[in-house]
Length: 319
View 1 (cartoon, rainbow, N blue to C red):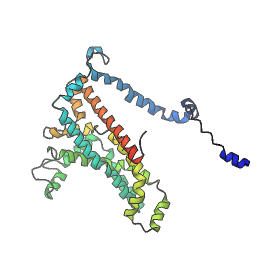
View 2 (cartoon, one colour; view 1 turned 30 degrees about the horizontal axis):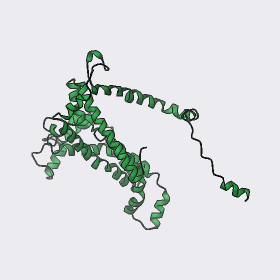
View 3 (cartoon, rainbow, N blue to C red; view 1 turned 45 degrees about the horizontal axis):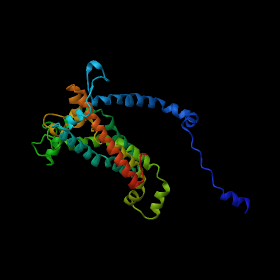
View 4 (tube, helix red, strand yellow; view 1 turned 45 degrees about the vertical axis):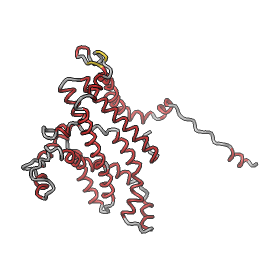
């Protein structure tokens, strides 16, 4: 056997895994760059987790955050037996599910449509226009919604009534039937453009030779989107879907709270607004902490399940 054959038969030694300390020393410049972010996350995300214990105690102002008698699952049982348990759960799931069903595909479709434009000036102009609503604050956005959907003087409400899409006596801001559509549609309008940026970035990595091959094979634009661009977006879509499912019950507190009124309250009272009212306004801190912890636990379960399903079906996951 020649020396070349012997060298080919020798198995390559597996690369030794670097320890965390050696990786920290060799890549210290990168760690220094992300150190401020780590500090901020630790201070504002991990340290406050110590307050979770309030959900299991009878909070006493005189004893501070660590004081109070141990109550166990008392406040969780109180929430489960509360008449507001099912209404808040149903309202939160309804808004979150509708928002994911219609709002999640919207930036994907927008990215695919704008990516087909050949005129670069028009493309950049449209991108700028659809990005702009994202920078409108929630308070200003709700004020705009109130002005445009006012029953008497609202431009949009009067337009919808004139073309017959809405009954003349319908109050879009106060009806229990229109609250969820108004919330979801305005969410899509405000954030669709901004959320499409990551899909634009994914489309920009597609090899140009694949487009050339499609042209040679005679594929039209729809076939190119189906066989080239959508498969390129699948990993990004799956990862973002997993992350969104981890926040499925975290319906935006500010917008829902500002859009609430006595007429739409039966469908607009969600977990986050209920926690604010019962915990801060009514000074029931332990009960509010229990409801908030329950909300976070459900989100965590959804995150784990979605990650497991995505890993089995598409072999894509967060971990």
